[in-house]
Amino acid sequence: MHITLEFGGGLELLCDSVKIHNVDVELKKGLEKLTMKDLLAWVRTNLIKERPEMFMKGDTVRPGVLVLVNDCDWELSGQLETTLQEKDVVVFISTLHGG
Amino acid sequence: MEEGNTIAKRAGSRLCCLCNERKPALKRPKTLEQICRDCFYNVFEEEIHQVIVGNHLFKDGERVAIGASGGKDSTVLAYVMSELNRRHNYGLDLFLLSVDEGITGYRDDSLETVKRNEVQYGLPLKIVSYKDLYGWTMDEIVKVIGLKNNCTFCGVFRRQALDRGAAYLKVDKLVTGHNADDIAETVLLNILRGDVARLSRCTSITTGEDGPIPRCKPFKYTYEKEIVMYAYFKKLDYFSTECIYSPNAYRGFAREFIKDLERMRPRAIVDIIKSGENFRISTSTKMPEQGTCERCGYISSQKWCKACVLLEGLNRGLPKLGIGRSRCLENSNDNRKEAKRNDGDRIIESKQCGSLDF
Ligand SMILES: [Zn+2]
Ligand SMILES: [Zn+2]
Ligand SMILES: [Zn+2]
Image (cartoon, rainbow over all chains, first blue to last red; front, side):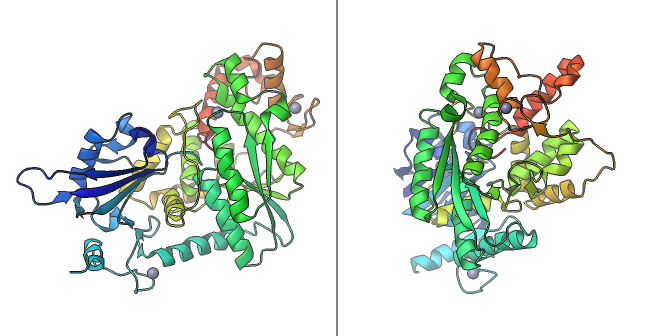
């Protein structure tokens, strides 16, 4: 599944200072849908190069990291349960850097 | 099914609870309302306007400097202040005021952001530099003192640099981008330290009325989440890299705690601010009497201001001078306690390097 990921607010520093990543995420065998929970695990394994604790806490994003799916706050779509679809755009922004 | 429909469905297929017309774009932490982008811009700006009007922050014709670091808070503040000034005819002359600490690869980059903001928002910019004011850049200071106490210098020098810049611009007030999360964090830290005097001061929307330039915080009740969402939706140009001299140190455990609380109960932030405001202990905590520094004329309760003490140390090759004994030089019989307190000062200035806020 093609997903566009965007990192901002300093989070890009955790993935080689690249802000936008066009990625292809394989669905796990036997699963038909990709949720944000799956995507986060995938991002952590495949994109985050350093200090993963700045991005995640447990199986979700660290408090203070905002997530938007297709420019919509993921708190409106069920957070980790949000189901992703082909060509979705997921944005992660840290609120924790600078002032 | 059309794409728009799918997205709306995933978003709970509800409509904005303010206009009942458009698809919601975010959940407000303060009220848990699901609102659309346009309604968000509206309530975000209007709430700040109400805070400004309700607290009589400005008078018609005043000159106001916006402490601008290039970071998210001060960038959104500069944008919103110029919008509101126009829309509601505040009659203010607005300026951007930045401090150049002389940190290669950090402040020079964030100052580029401020310079773009100067053009984008049409606000005149004044930059005051440590090098000009003190003869030292932070890079040079760090070379001498190492990484351990550099934020003490940063904090003391920045505060004074802002006042000097404000005096140069002849402004009546300085506004800073402190947001609700910052204030809740400071309230918590002051409670933990048992610092009653600071606890009652730290929630004031205006401080320093006895000093050279009063400072106000129009974002006192504005959530960090909303500031960042606003900047994102409006595509505002801000800089977000940590200060190289305090990687990860800008946020301590208190910040982490606030963010955990917010996740469980978003209203917690505003509740903490409210309890800070209501915290009145009837002791007459005596504030040190303000005089002026004999050396540079800056306000000081001591013979020399803190910046001059630190500078003297640097210039004499004794950079530890002034560190570890903060405000009460006359109370030097209890150095250990004072040293501890100074550590606390460093925590309390938890935004020391990333921004102009303290
Ligand atoms: Zn609406
Ligand atoms: Zn510092
Ligand atoms: Zn002085």
